[in-house]
Length: 244
Image 1 (cartoon, one colour):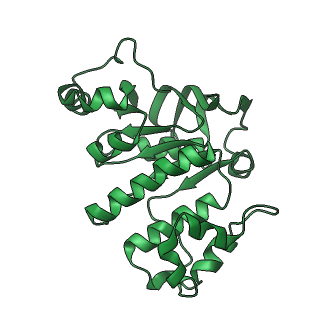
Image 2 (cartoon, one colour):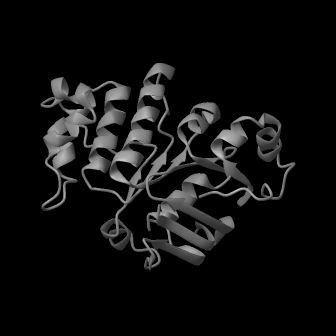
């Protein structure tokens, strides 16, 4: 597998405040990285920086070996970086089809082709997005992201406000999207165990730094390491582990 996303010595924040610093991450095509950590650790700010919506304060971001221009969301999106925000950001008065169509690329997949991945949206196709349930809205957000043919998919709090069974189904879809579309996925998530079940690797961000990283299966089997990372006890990465 080849490297899809790489950030090196990346630092960023909002305005003059620094939210994270010296972050190194590598995510390969077809793989899922779970980005974990306590509230306020800088996870969302890191995703916004990777998407170009916030300028980096230092370091580099590359997709398929090409360095992205700093703080240029249109350039990042053109390179294949797609963000699924935690607030969904749907056009609630537009139909399901219209919400997908506005994100579709020229010569890209047709909106209805997304029903293969999200069949539950077919019966809601002509309804306004505001009339959908929370789970259906999250499917729509994912469909809108997928129609953009992402090379790098950044997902912020997929499970927010959803029932556990719906979350499990959505997480399985995330894993399938990574494998079928060969995109690199970074999944920010508070449901640690569910995230580790679908991820290939994981990293814990705390106080603006990566304090723990490794294979998702290994970290899932080491709850004491995860707890320590969340509490700020472990301040060094796992020796020999990889976040790719």
